[in-house]
Amino acid sequence: MDNCGASDGSVQKRDVIRVGTRKSQLARIQTDSVVEMLSKRFPTARFEIVAMATTGDKILDTALSKIGEKSLFTKELENALEKNEVDLVVHSLKDLPTSLPPGFTIGAVCKRENPYDAVVFHPKCTVKTLEGLPQKCVIGTSSLRRAAQLKKMFPHLEFRDIRGNLNTRLKKLDDREEFSAIILATAGLRRMGWENRIGQILSPDECMYAVGQGALAVEVRAKDQDILSMVSALQDPQTVLRCIAERAFMKRLEGGCSVPVAVNSVIEDSQLYLTGAVYSLDGSDYLKETMQTSICSPLEDVEGPNDDVQHVGITALGVPRAALDAAEHLGTQLADLLLSQGAREILVVARQLNDSR
Ligand code: DPM
Image (cartoon, rainbow, N blue to C red; front, side, top):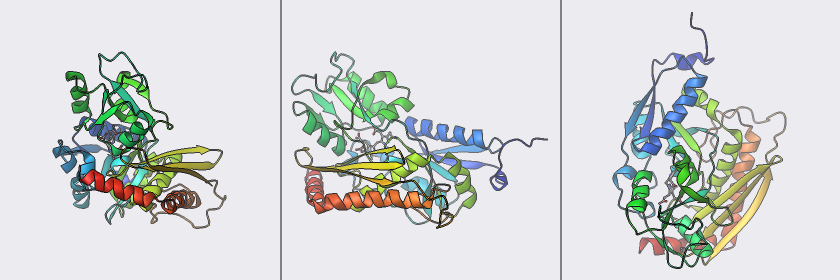
């Protein structure tokens, strides 16, 4: 008799668990890795992957920051979730808005990869640091966040939009003489198996990362207790606390992928540290602060289980409620501090300038 594996009998009742994904190669790789982790923990469950093209995949010629739509990569997948065509969907957390539509939740945030940005140089480029590149070299990025920080740090360089999925961008870099280098997330490059193309990983002093960068999120129907409890096996408590703080910061600032907002978070000795910043488009004007909170929870979690509680769209079963609350509060407080120093004005101007480009 096959009696090995999953302790969760309820999930076993479904013959197949359907997993939705975007069609890009990176999305497929990310989804495969989540399915592999789930299969290890639930060896008798059967998974089927359903791939779909989203609006974000279809509009390849416009910079992300110019397409106001927040749910660019998520809407089609959420429709499929809602209609029970799929049971869970894998996303890069950084592509998920800080508020999900009602009925959905992020049931797991997996252990974070390296969240920092990396520089990929043109094959003919012998210099392997941004600092060392000659005057006026052109760097490709469509991220306002990356461009703002790097313009401030490396004023001798020029920055230009580059769009398309990772494969397209790398090809645009290699096949043309237009760009000396492009900036991409280290996590994405590693997952694609292109780590050998990384010339330099940017430190947080040079370029802080985007909210949620480097972490995979599993989106589910908020009421689907069986699937919620299954995916919660993938939850990484430290990653989830850091990402809740980061998302709360973004939410209070009313940011999105169309504003230059950056973060850096660290957990050390039960303290969660969050650094957050907002920039003008050219990086000349900016505000940056760090705050911390204790995430050491009392032994008894007075508030009881958190099945029904979301923190910035995340349901973190198994993580102490007090720590989740503290993380969310940290992000909100840090945003309030920056808002009191004039962050809204910086973001309003950045948004207007970007819209009129
Ligand atoms: C978001 C941004 C970018 C992606 C904006 C930003 C980069 C866009 C660009 C919100 N989503 O980072 O400031 O460079 O024009 C994206 C990537 C990954 C998830 C690729 C990348 C992979 C890494 C991860 C696109 N979304 O950033 O190089 O899982 O975090």
